Length: 439
Image 1 (spheres, helix red, strand yellow):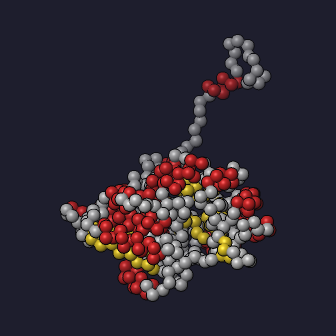
Image 2 (tube, one colour):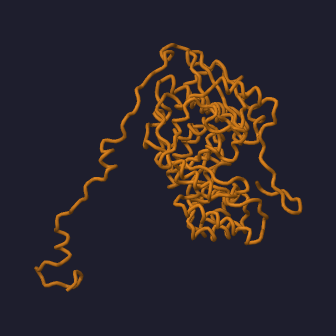
């Protein structure tokens, strides 16, 4: 007699016998036991000597430095001698951001660097024309530097100011391949040896609006090769692939289960992206070319992405990136900061990650294809060990501010040399008929 068949009145059933058995619980896991009382504190609070001096946190100077390979650093110093560093890199538009920073500098001298929200609001709302990649990148550099200053003045890491840590490590991924991806298998093996468990690569080379379906074959092969060594891979479509090809490529990739596909269509195509979203089970990521919460809002409301990728050097710095992350959580969207940039943008992204529940992974530019001429993520750092990759992640940054030490002498020297050089610009892709294609 089964548990669900009718039983004589007053008799016990199999179902009731099971329900009255004493529940058996497994012992807590190793991680549950380790964090039974929450995350522990790993540092001593060390306020700066000027913290108690009235007027010491007023902004004294704002400078910017263009350094190779293609980064724009911002330095702010207070009257009390505290120096904060930020990054306002906008790849291919350096001079435009520098012009905006010149305007910002003359406006902010004498303001209290501790009032980050007031300064951010002033820079955004005081102008009739607002937003856009140039102004927001300039604001990003300033905003990150102000958070660095505030952390140093109070003697705490930036994540402490963002509500405290919710994790002790942030997952990261490195790059394989380049603008025209090749040799990805060997590069993936190197990345695995470096401690990465995830990588990202460009999905395609230059591709036509409606190209041969065979133009997609190598993309699928590359993904299969990389995954064959036991690491995950995201595919960056980079906005190169138009709608007709994008849905073919997503379908071809699906059996190989990429970590995500990034910018499968150009920003602005919200309805088209929703159509693609409904055709694939692959997580869709996007956001490096969105600069405020208002830019992200249509994608959140349309339900057409799984991962938002704000670039902290473009999207208003730590202040706006954190707000985008909070907004994304309400739509069950993960946050994976876009960061093919320098150490300041990377450190700032990690601080958001350490304090954000829906953070998933952060891009890391160490040894990526844009970093040429002997310049790389650690070039201007005195403590590169803080970015050590272990088990696919980077550990908590625990010193005041952003937690990285820069070689200011080298930065000034390199910036002086770079003044005589043409700033970095992105490559230009053309088709067989000479037509310009998406890069």
